[in-house]
Length: 308
Image (cartoon, rainbow, N blue to C red; front, side, top):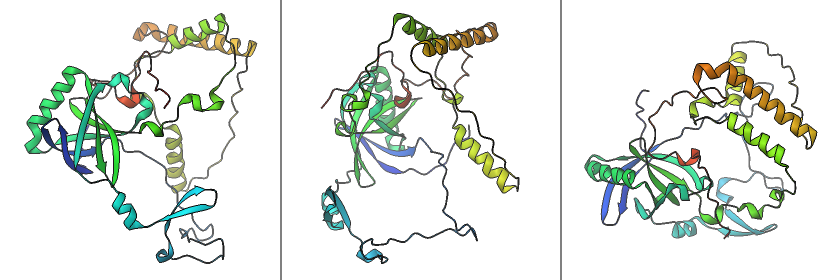
């Protein structure tokens, strides 16, 4: 793959103990989202949005707009920009490692967005030293960093021969499962159903390869856009909705049919790829990481967070 010449989004230094390593952060994920503009249907010109006060129906200009925080229904506290400035975290330009932990101890739910960490020329040796020491110890650094006027909790870890920084959610931002009433499931599963479901999981088990999965909706929409831009007339045909699987006999029948399909696929592909009931995964495009990526980590047992 061709090297990308992107600009760093942040420059600063990693610090742990008395060691300081000058570094730069580079974007590790480029989200491909679909963005649409609101157009006037008659002349196809983009529409402009106005801010209207619902009390008098008049347009409000920028000089009369203030920030308000809703403390209860329809009751707001006004916060001035200078007050936010005074409360803003001090921009230290440092990734301050506070602790080293095992990656398996961090629930993937805490991870947010990854960035590549590259050394400045003068930080090459201590960067390499930290990288190799973390690879050897198998540890992840937990740190705090201030970027874009906001303080982040983050994890610094080795990945493919480099350091990767992943911003994290704070503990009070993650909702414990026991706090969600809808997750209280009162249903019984018999031994036969459990055994069939386990066999089905085994037959579909493979090694993770991110390249096998695509955003099919975005691809279909982009294809639609290209066809319409070329002047093609589009005719949509409704697709049949999948039938819901219910409990009892319907569930057992669905499991039996799924296992039969998996076995048929195994017979058709097994001799060619030697894989257990599933098509062989393609060889990953990148080298194997020292640790599985946090957002993709698949541990045998996921360590759950405790309720605060």
